[in-house]
Image 1: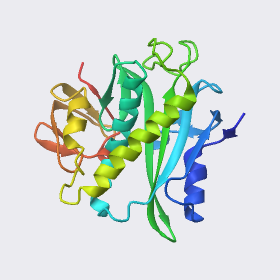
Image 2: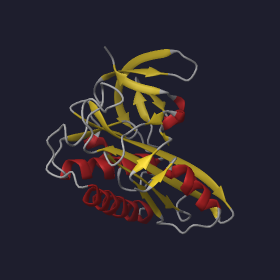
Image 3: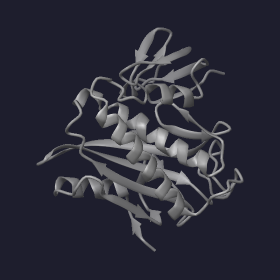
Amino acid sequence: MVELPSTNAELVDRARRGAAPGTVLAVDFQSDGRGRRDRSWVAPPRSGLAFSFLLRPHQVPIERWAWMSLLVGLAVDAAVNAAGAPAALKWPNDVTVHGRKIAGILLERVDTPGGAALVAGIGLNVSTTREELPVSGATSLRLENADITDRSLLLRSCLRNVEALYRSWTASAGDPAGGIQSSYVRRCETLGQRVTIFNPDGSESTGLAEAIDEAGRRVVDGKPVSVGDVVHVRPAS
């Protein structure tokens, strides 16, 4: 069994030591998997897909890099749908099925001797049972009766999707969103709904999720909200 504490942490270290763009690390088990804001990602051995990959998009202005978080979400969303589960996206990049989280994504910018780089980590629940899920609001491909639960096939599907979207994004120099804004808007399930935003200072605010702007920010009641400005976004009760 291939095991690491965290594929992201390992690949961040390798990036600083000169690892090439396109490097992929996939494991059977992470003992210290991480999500956004240092949340943990827990899954029994071989029950899910856990992998990270390295990109060095030096040809793209750094202010556009925020779109990479949404791009990777789109790629995983497409792979889950292709596997036979009706997935959707919750901004910025949680992949859900029937409102339950099936995949989480963590992107980290890394300063290296060769310039800034991006490490993206993905955790996808594949054969996880209901009893094995860490929270009640999660699900897995097995629980959703997906057609494909082979982790190797799912890994290839995710990486093919990332490659296709990444090529389009890097080639669209005149578009801040790199040509993926309309695709993301079609897949984002909470646009048009009232949402509650949980802020880092502990406060909450509620408003209508109206749009995704050219910087990849969610627009709530006319106000742009970036990924770094929020702890969590949920449909308003």
